[in-house]
Image 1 (cartoon, rainbow, N blue to C red):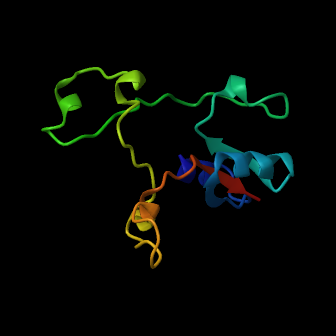
Image 2: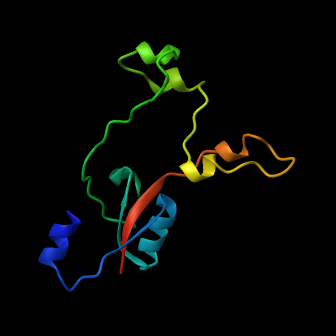
Image 3: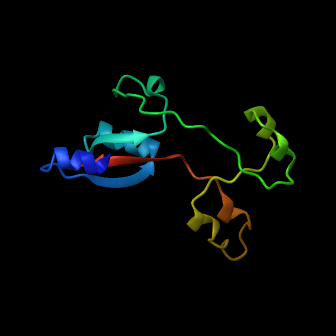
Length: 119
């Protein structure tokens, strides 16, 4: 997709950055970015933005084969609400906790991320 865009618009520079969706929307609002690609509901972002749904993805749960949810073909959010979940970049998970710190500190949830095009 990016190669096709560059071929059709050779004078346009595209720079990719990654940040949280809140930061990306703030940068669009502040005219620091021309656009952002983010996993947000286009109907829920308010009047400040125009948004178009590009595609929808399935959200999947990955578990070991011996986990109780592994045998289910369909899982609801209610079923996993009591499970310990990790959503963090690999680098964060590999970071040891600070001396005397909480051993779970390296496995904290990270905010949702988004990609964008910068002018």
